Image (tube, rainbow, N blue to C red; front, side, top):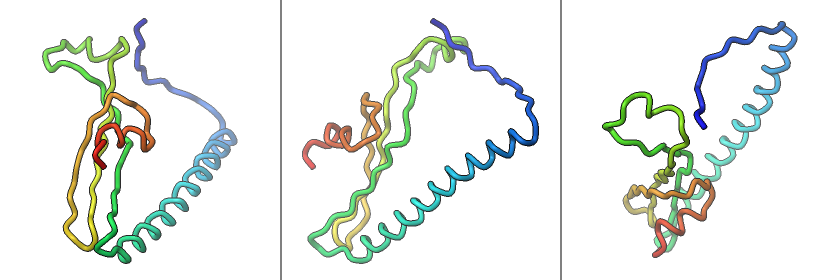
Length: 122
């Protein structure tokens, strides 16, 4: 099965636009509220670290398609391709230096499970 990515044009009235805008604004406001609260909590944690504490921050947000650099352009689109997740992050122990790390997994889950698979010694 081949899937095609195509640009489409949609026409609608101002009323529909207003409804869609308000739905997206509501979602954005919730996201922004959570982000502000999380950043505040994160800042407090970082300021209160002792020499026996560790702070680990991991970003689970990226999935990438696997492909060959020698593929012709038509091979880049279409059939389902294998994906990988790239998990980037950093850690800090106490008030010491910040160290970054990166792990690659074929698990597309965006939860703590892949971290345990990539870094089993932690």
